[in-house]
Amino acid sequence: MENVASLSVIQEITNLSKEGLILYSLKEAQITYINPAATELTGLMENASQKEVFSLLSRLDQPELEHLRAYWTEILEKSTAHVQVRFPAADDREIYLSFRGYLVADGEVMAVMVRDITEAYQHKEYLLKYTMKKNNLLDTLVHHISGALNLMQHLSTEAEKHVGSDNEQNLRTYLSLVQENSRHCLRIIEALNKEEYREAPHIIPRKNRLDVVKQVGNIADELKQSYISRPISFRAASNSIVVSTDEVKLLLIVNNLTSNAIKYSHESDPIVMTVDEFESEVVIGVTDKGIGIPTPLQQKIFQRQQGLGRIGLQGEQSFGLGLYISKTLADMLGGKIWFESEEGKGSSFFLSIPKE
Image (tube, rainbow, N blue to C red; front, top):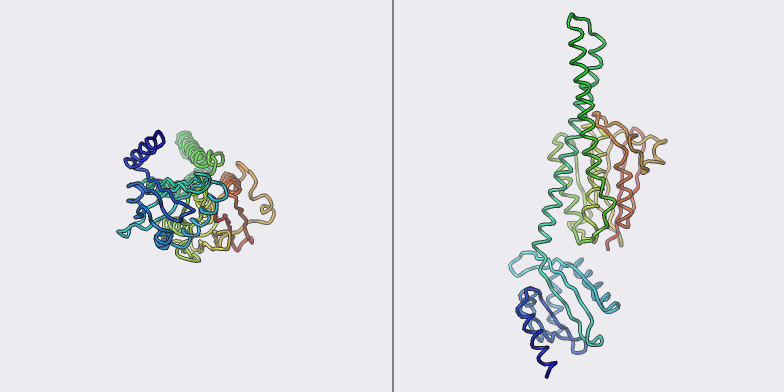
């Protein structure tokens, strides 16, 4: 009687909860219990058969279906698993559901907790897009302001050589102030650039499902808007490639590679961004037709070289940290980064990341 009462209390709680609960009997191959929240999220009903469950899953895109199959295998092997899935809703919207499953009742029942994470996922997408815009704004600031300040410093130095008027001392004072202001602004830019990447390598990767084609395509679109006169193009192997990775770290790497492509190529040189898919990995490429990397530098290009970076073609300051941090982040993602370059002919950088 006590067990019946306890079960009744648990059922009452789950009926009131906004979090879904599904009990699926592996022996009977059907749902033996589902609370209203889970029914609303999935459309499934109590006593739904295996066939009805599979009919629901058939609406998923192939990558999501494969992801769920891996989840099913994992829960049978480890008795627990967690997965996030992009799910088609009835009104043609896309919702994102979190499934956390457990094997209970001596392995005969699969208990699955279901949560709607659409709002959180959309918020994360907004933050990523905001971060990407902020990074591009910072790169644009560094690109234009550094060039202008370096030019101002150069002109003031040259003007100082031709000082000969009656107000020579005042002119020297003003020129000295211009030079000091230039150095001060460059120090501020350097501090901003270091702050942008300083803490990223120390954050533990947090994997989420994301569409690499969509995210890299967004970066390409932002660059086209920021550098209107530059020929920037984007090509992907398919319309959508979904992987599990830390998207923030991934986008930091891609932003750094595109920033370098702009920094070390002329305004008329094309920049091509690509996404290619292979059996177990995705490869992102950034190719430019700029000045390339001198052979003596190629062996240490991914080493920490703080203060030893090459000046960009428009006078952009470089701090020798970007590729070192990109390599660190790529390692944390379980991927790898490499390049092909010939001095005077340009460079191609590639980042590979595992699909799972």
